[in-house]
Image (tube, rainbow, N blue to C red; front, side, top):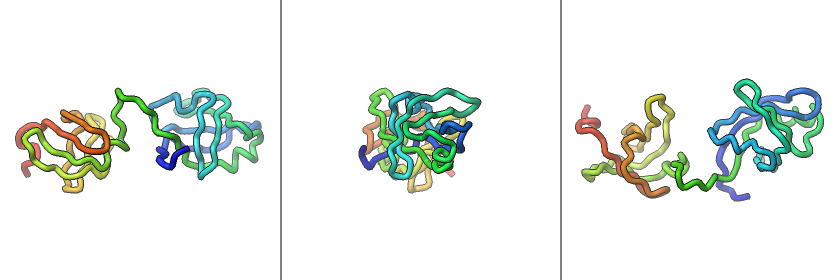
Length: 156
């Protein structure tokens, strides 16, 4: 596994007596809990044997975690995984660090985070600008973003 792991979920607590765990995903990619998937918790690789939805979480069985006591040792740990290579998706980790300019050439700064917003995720730049991701016009992962914003959006 590489060192460029992404947070994909969190173990909340044991479920039952046989080592099952409740996992909350922080990703929309449900294949993260497919049988055979490998997740990392505090440097330890955990292979998923099985999983099933349970309310707003998943009940997950990891290889080698066969008792409630063993499951309880994993309580609260973050789950990390390798990035998924999907050319049709834009990933937050590819946006952070990109320089942002408008189609007119205005420098908007560098993306320092992506803020979740119901209408459209927002690019937060080091210059203090908040730019809806929906205005993205061109994108070179890990390098640059060109946005086509309405006139006056940055006027105060």
